[in-house]
Image 1 (tube, rainbow, N blue to C red):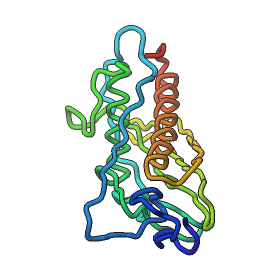
Image 2: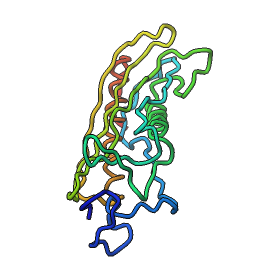
Image 3: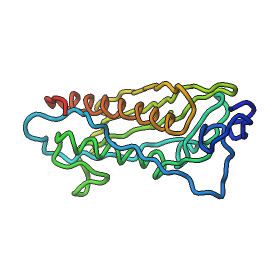
Length: 211
């Protein structure tokens, strides 16, 4: 599998879907749809929530990542997509939905959402999704999934950056079947979402435990 190009049909494939990366890109067929939600284990605030509107901006991303297709890089300069799968929405929108779900579950703030209840919010989480791809080299049946999210907490009334941090996670791919690739994406995203929730609560001086 995966001998000449990500979307070539390998002679060794006997069953459809045995390798997501080695399968023919059947553009006319519907793609399986996958989603990333909030992790089950998250930081949970102790005590009363802060009385603020916490706004989650949609992550910015390059055109390569601003799509519902699942990115695979056979080299640093080349971009391809899984032939038989896609995200439920564009990657930035999906990550924003997972962020909102995560911070709602922390119970740390009066309100968490895409837009403020009043004319402006109090604090916003502004992020850039700079990496969100699988790295699988030609002639290899293993690889990694890499995710990097640059996060900033911003005071909305004057656009002051309160604090910032970059989160990077790498998940191993023991094989290149679609379920394995999706599971690695989910693992990397869940670790970042969990780390990000703890960072925000610590930055806001909110005591927390684990859910």
